[in-house]
Amino acid sequence: MELADIIKERVSTRSFMGAPLSTEHAALLESLEKTFEKCRLVAINGVDGHVGTYGVVKGAAAAIAVICADDEASTLMRAGYEGEKAVLRLTEAGLGTCWLGGTFRHTSVSRKAKCKGDEFPVAVIVIGYIAEKRRLLDKLMVKMVHSRSRKNFDELFKGAKEYLHKYEKSLELLRLAPSARNAQPWRAVADSRGVHFYYADNGRFAPLDMGIGLCHFLLAEGCGFDRVTTDEFMSEAKDGNVYAGSVLFPA
Ligand SMILES: Cc1cc2nc3c(=O)[nH]c(=O)nc-3n(C[C@H](O)[C@H](O)[C@H](O)COP(=O)(O)O)c2cc1C
Image (cartoon, protein in one colour):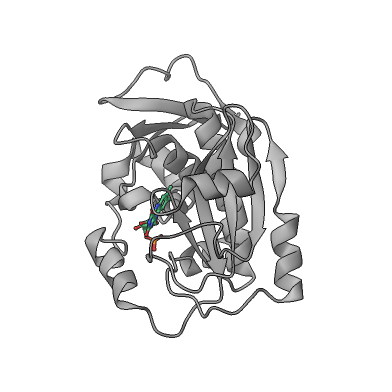
């Protein structure tokens, strides 16, 4: 499956069938458990009693706990990037997912993930087989946060036409990323050197959302998180938005 198709296929699923993961999918889940610099993904196969989604999610088979060692913006961005990479792998495998930042029981997840010191679960990604019919609460959540809509391309991304055109496909895929309450904090300026990213400081999930969006952009450009650098000319806050980093493409 092409990356663009996987990204277009992904939507937040809150109504699952309730069936446990197949052996093959359980192995995929396990392979996604990894430790990165200052964040890690923990696989939880069987969510009952471990996640507690306050009724927002029903019938999920598994989850990934996204654990951070501190709440620095760079840590949260990396966690968003790695978590979303996992989401796209699961989507490609035909599974439904939903990021949860608020509606999960933090203490149970911390215990399950054996959090130590300052570590905390910033989010969980619930996983499972998509139910044929969405429940009422699921439909309500989608309606409340206008999940299906996205801000216009021109509202999010600025720059001279030739540069915006150069990165249009990747920025379009970024625009389809999930974000907490569908807040879409991602902003970018494209110029002759590459793309400079900023996020609207609209809540504690903004850097995590930024990392999620960057994941779509970076994968579309065929590069990894190590390509995000600080560009001294562009690192000032812009229009009240926080500088996240730049992805530069030498001519
Ligand atoms: C970091 C993050 C936290 C989220 N937290 C919740 C949550 O607590 N409860 C929920 O129902 N959805 C949650 N969502 C899902 C968003 O509401 C959803 O991604 C957004 O509305 C866009 O819809 P889509 O994912 O279907 O494209 C979260 C998404 C992200 C990225």
